[in-house]
Image (cartoon, rainbow, N blue to C red; front, side, top):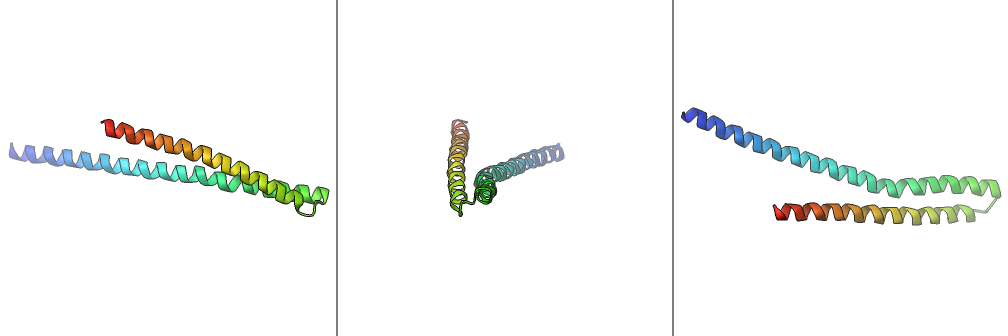
Amino acid sequence: MDNLRVFLINFRLTAVYLCFMETKKLDWIKALEMFARLSSWIVFPVLIGALIGNWLDKKYNGHNFIFLGVIGLSFVISMLGLVKNASREYKKIDGENKNKEEE
């Protein structure tokens, strides 16, 4: 009987530990996904803007004014998307924290 009790206690502790580790793993993956999503709002609009601006500059011989204008526009688009997604992530995290406090 004593061995069964020790086994059950060890089994419960192992299950709790594994659940805790699984939660930590999911938090790590969620953080990495959020990082990738927010970083993509910095890289891709500016990269696409640079390519389009360079192409337009060569096509219309704009002496780098078109290039700089397109880069500026892509920077504004990048910042708007970044702020929108960051505020969405903040609200999601804030909602999760409120749910944890209620439990």
